Length: 82
Image 1 (cartoon, rainbow, N blue to C red):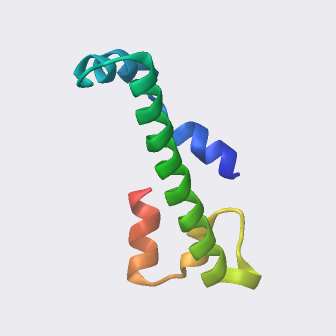
Image 2 (tube, rainbow, N blue to C red):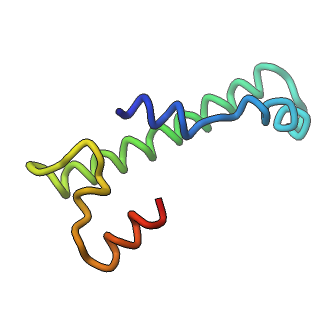
């Protein structure tokens, strides 16, 4: 599930050329460094969220965390927002 979320949340093909154009002192090596740092940060954020969600809902975690939010106002709001 983690891999699928990463693939759907990181869609940047159409942004590559404008991002490269805006890079100061552009070179392929600098752009690669920027991409590796950006993707590393994204992976860390998603892994942190997944870890916190698992630790919070531990024994009863389901494949869809929205099911585990309960029937409170905030849980229903989160499901409606999605």
